[in-house]
Image 1 (cartoon, one colour):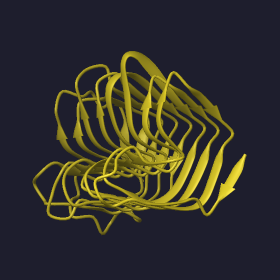
Image 2 (cartoon, rainbow, N blue to C red):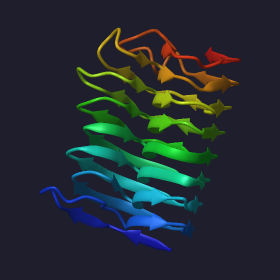
Image 3 (cartoon, rainbow, N blue to C red):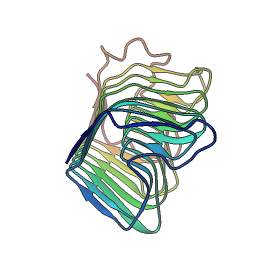
Image 4 (tube, one colour):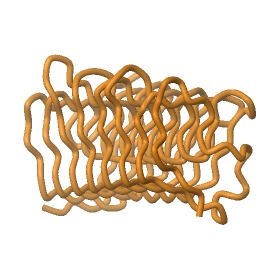
Length: 238
């Protein structure tokens, strides 16, 4: 299924915007939303605003997305898997994303429960006026496993922090990042949890890399801004 020129403009404190405002226990696959243009307040994603214990497979989005508050992601604004788990697999977002808190090229934030993100990519730039911004995921808080993913867009936290080329912030226990890469420039307030790959890290990182040439204009040279209990097996600049 392909939808082009999908448009939403609701700037006056309207939440849960996307093709699906909220999903619960859903299975969504093989959907393309191309050249979308969406503006809302919070819980904003081109495909799903808030995704609860759902499975999303082989979906693609492109366009522009902006919010005035929290949870803004190119594909999904927020994943909340409290009491269960969710999966995002084989999805691509080529979206210019801007918001205030929890901003990601693919997913704005994963806030509860188990979640697996695998074989996904984000190509567009992600910008926040507050904290928690990442090329792929803005923030991931406990039980998040990211496998075989990439982010190629630039990341800009402005005067704020918690910014990373792949993930802005990982917190809590049982997070993993495996065989992933990022290539973008990362900007943020130097010395406040900004990293070329991850801003603040509690995840176990293995066999990942970042491009030292394309990220050379970053406001930091640190691959991880603050490693807060994570184990880094291999993270290489190439």
